[in-house]
Structures are given as structure tokens and as C-alpha cells.
Amino acid sequence: MNDQIKKIIIASAASNWIIGKNGSLPWNIPADLQHFKRTTMGFPVLIGRRTFDSIGKILEGRINIVVSRSLEPVTKDNLIIVNSIERGIEQAVSRNYERFYIAGGSSIFAQTIKIAHELIISHVTGDFEGDSYFPKIDLENWQTESISTYPEFVIKLYKKKERK
Figure (spheres, rainbow, N blue to C red):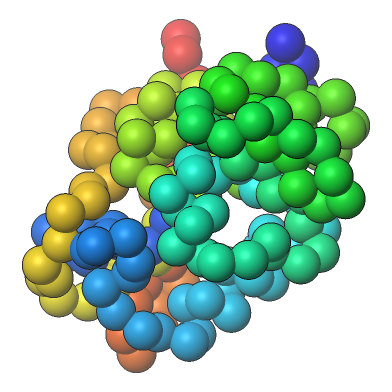
């Protein structure tokens, strides 16, 4: 597998690490959604089927790679349905992009955090009720590279620390 392609997790999480409630975001922050769109535009986005369902449409301007055990594999226009994360990564790698984004949900994040090169986390101010969590970030493995502050959230870019 090509390790040259940068694997970047992009997520929005509350202070208590909640990322979802009943299949959707527990908050409505247009500036964060614009950040997601601006950052991922033009690159493949790997998401789970439930996240794809919650979005409700194909994300325009991006190849949508959806991981599903229940849907039949498909390749059509900007939609690719695969039956495993590994196949999804293969699809992103085979298209020769310099990077691709992993955009959830919690199961996809938990399974890919160890292989990701970067994390872009919008830390939403406050605790929220929900049923989906972002996995714990072990700061022994990640260093904060940059911080951008907005009224309702703070975006932190974490880069994986080099192994010595």
C-alpha cells in the first residue's frame, strides 16, 4: 500500500468528545461546515455508510468512498462503495492524490486513527449529549501543529510524532 498518500482524519468534536447524536451532528455551526468543505474539496473523502446516510447526498467536488457491509460495491461518478476500510484506502491510493480525508463516523475513526498522518479536529465549545464519540487522542503519539480560533470552535491540526 502506498504510504506516500497522506491520510488525514477530519472531525468535529465537543469538549466531551461527542461527535454525533441519532445519526447527525448535535450542533449547527455553519463556519465549521464551511471549513470542512474548503479543506476536503477536490480530494477523496472516506466515510462510513451511516455517516453517508446522515449527509444525505454525495459531497460535490470530491470522490466519496463509502465503507458499507450492507450495500453492494459500486463505482459511479463520484461515488465508490466498498466493503472494507482497506478497500476504501486502496481506492483513494489508486487515484494518485497527494492526500485523502477520513470523515467518520466513530467506528471508521477508531479503525484508522493508528494509520492517519494528521488529525484536523474542530473542538466545539461545550459538552453535548450524544451517542457517538471520537476516539481518545494519545498525545504521546500526536503533536499540535497549529491552532485556529473561531467564536464557537477551535481547529487544531495534530501531526503524528516521528518514531525514533
